[in-house]
Image 1 (cartoon, rainbow, N blue to C red):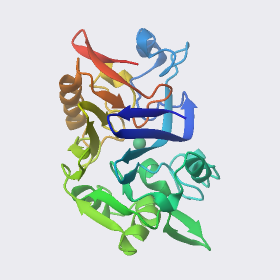
Image 2: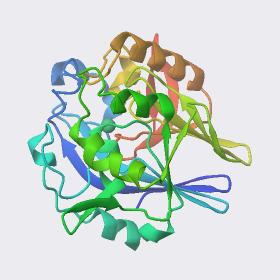
Image 3: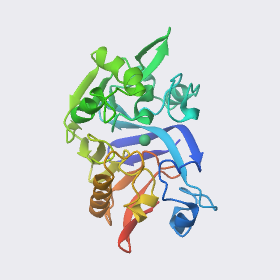
Image 4: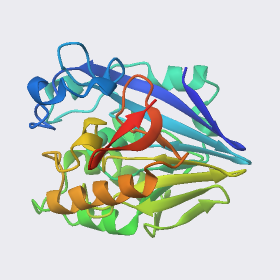
Length: 284
Ligand SMILES: [Zn+2]
């Protein structure tokens, strides 16, 4: 179990899936030849053959009086996903969450950095053939611009399946609060707009007792994008903007003690951004 302390705040990682290789569809430029020279990525973020490691996990933020789950992975029993292995999962995520001390009824806030399929899955679970809120006592917080984009059908003009089975049911249950992309969640936690990956994408800044952390969301999928900020993900809605966001945010973080906690970073998952030539790398 990986945990990080930021002053009075604790962040705990709950893994749903980990994979090595198979990242070609998301970061096509990050071929083994292109990344093998990035020695700092071994062993946490790539193997000896230059295959990238990635993770799908949730992060539970415990702040004084608050228990917030950030991004809810893929979920069990979901159908019609683009990636075949994401269909009809029967994983132990909820048991693992409870074993870590977070019964689902104890979560007071669900925070989605954006509304892609691997960030909303456990918003709901299937009970008697219906999708019901997994966290019945929580408010589900989503950026208004993000919700409105997908509610209107995104660029395709049709609501994606994950919106229908994992976002609509919690909205219809009256559990969603639509918020600004720079909203404050509590004294220690606030949103930071990091657009480009999706129209209303946010990262999450934690600040307590003089210590700082940033949960990335998907403005950066893998640490190799610190060395190559212009490697946009195929799933970035606006690749020019996502590249600009990566350069800006890494530039701001470089050389600071801010702990960067990656939403899809495997292994150590967190570290500090430092300058490396005219780009950056992650020091774990
Ligand atoms: Zn993602």
